[in-house]
Image 1: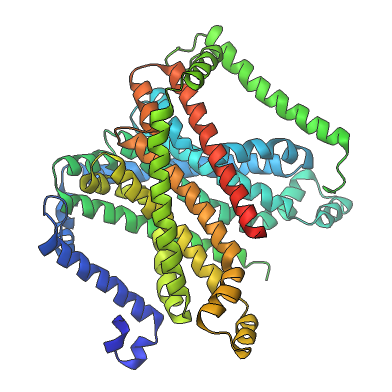
Image 2: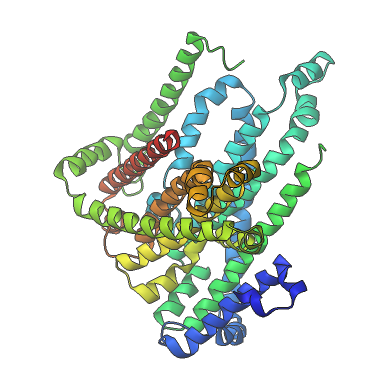
Length: 257
Length: 255
């Protein structure tokens, strides 16, 4: 394996070996791009890295990145607000939970991409359509985790608070909310993944200003190094976002210990 | 609290659900007949129902369904085989698990649908690009669950089996596999759902045939009633397939 020739101390550190694996993948990519694959369809890693600057110098790409980021933020903010309110409304009462959770779970399990053309008909091909589609992808995981989170609160805590004269608001603020925080952050992480998927699906389907426009353009002009650079940047962004959400989730899940 | 279900409560729940669905349908009907919402944006529920009956009875969906099912079957076969094999090989040593699992998890977090333009560039607009992307996307849940399944086998079981002289194949067949099987099955169910979703998705985005492609075609031909009917049909197909896979998983667990 890769580890065979490395000094013993490094070969024992998973992090170092992981970097080695990544380096190996880059080397294979480089060799394939340089000598094995038609340059019309693929570019070596070094060229992609070199051309990364020209991706961002392409007219409109920074703007497109900004618009896509804006779509993500707007869709995520809407999804969190709506998901939290609906999740609380549905989850706090046994009756509403039993009545509406099956409907919500059905909608969550539906392949939403089938209704993407309807979104385009309703919201046009601009950012509104991407925000709406990202929202519907992100809101359901948040509703489900929030509803499950408030369901997990021990009834004795609520009864106790009520017995000590807590008002409905105080109950929500001092009992429900602190217990909700860990599941809310789990929901936000899942919601973020959903929003990212929804926005990117809508971008790839049809786009006039966002990054979807440029992935189409780079594909049609057979500019694989630019396409790979753009996709790589977005993938790196997704990995970073996910890592940040995971950190937050771990940080806020700890408060009870 | 929840275990003591009163029949009256269940009736109330059902009544609320029915009322909710009926309310949505009524709003939909009124919006199309009274409030003058454009027929292009929202066809009337009656028209959609008639179109749905027509789609199902005429059997016009068969060629598209065949394409989609073929793509899903091939993609899932590839990702299940590769996912389980690679997952098993990685899980065999704790060190390899620590090296590869974070890599797979990071890739799993990437919306791999991003790579669709690249796959279309490589494999064209036909089924090959859908199969390749579906297999790539569904590989990660299968591999990650396989790693989890095999690396959480109770150590005492393995030690006990070893001390009784089991080795190699016997250890795998009678200790490791049965212990990890339920988790692997869960991963395969997840993988199947993801493969189905991403293949319908890629058909919507860029394709020449398949259920997703047909929806877009109807939308572009401005046949909203038929398109809504087709969406309902595809959602039903997806629900049936996912349900069948859950049944298979439950059956596999018992076995």
